[in-house]
Every structure is written in C-alpha cells, then in structure tokens.
Length: 175
Image (cartoon, rainbow, N blue to C red; front, side, top):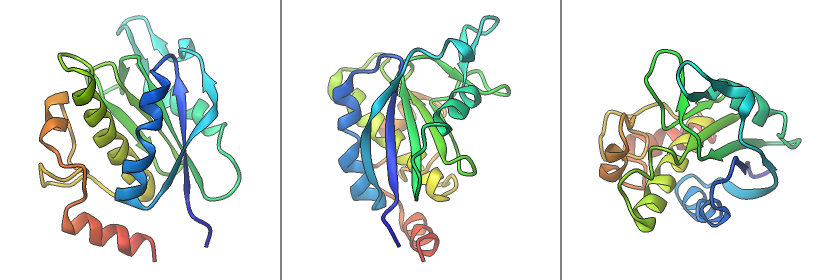
C-alpha cells in the first residue's frame, strides 16, 4: 500500500517557513508524509462572512479539496485568517475526513506568543488536524495531541504526541 501523503497548502500569506516546519512532526507522530505544495491559494475572499468578520472553514476546505492529487492524498490548508463554523464563535481549524481536506489558522494561535511558541502551537494543531484526516476522533486526555483545543492556551498544554489510546486507534485504522 502506498504511503499516504498530506499536501500542505498556503492559503493567504502565512510564512512559508512555518509550513516546512510541519513536515517532520506530522511524519514522526502519524507516519504520514507531509509535503509543502507548490500551489498556494490567495486570501479566501469567497469564504468571508461580512457579518462575522471571519472566514467559513467549509468553503475553504471545498476549494482545498480541488487540489488533491490522485492516490492516497489529503490536503491541509494553513491560513492567516480568522476561521469559523456556524455554531462556534471561532475555530482554530477544521477537518473533513470524507473530503480528505482540512484547514488550520494562525490567526488566534499567534496571539500573545513569540515565534517558538507559535511554531509549537501550529505543529500541535497540524498534527491534530492530520490525525482527524486519518480517522482519529477527539480525545479526553488534555495532554494528547487529539484533545479538542477551545483556546490557543489549550495547545500549550497538549503534548506533540498521541496518548496510548489514540496510538492504538491509529494502529487499528492503518491495518
């Protein structure tokens, strides 16, 4: 079976170096080959909701899904805009296993932190979204990378790794 590949796509203008810093943690934690795509998307004006002043995740993920390459591939868009889903004031990211697409935002992750802490938060949440694309659900262990972060500070408490339960679940999914 060919190795699964996660395409990392810039949406808007996140720093390109940050995308490259996601490749190793995703490979190490999930066994998924992550590669920065040559394709970059502009700021997603089509997803902007003027009443909220935010960008709708699902619209961005639909656009990202059109970039999927043939084979066992998935796509994760990294953006610098503020994201939402209808029932929530904001989200850090969102994943849809069926469409094999996810999006993650730096907008709230960068608030009040320096470069190293922002990089760590982004890596933790990228591993989290990639985990969803592989079939993992949210975890109740606040230290597990699959724990649902409701605020950027939750990312600081999470470890970069899967807990034993999630690791076992990933092994089952990969059989």
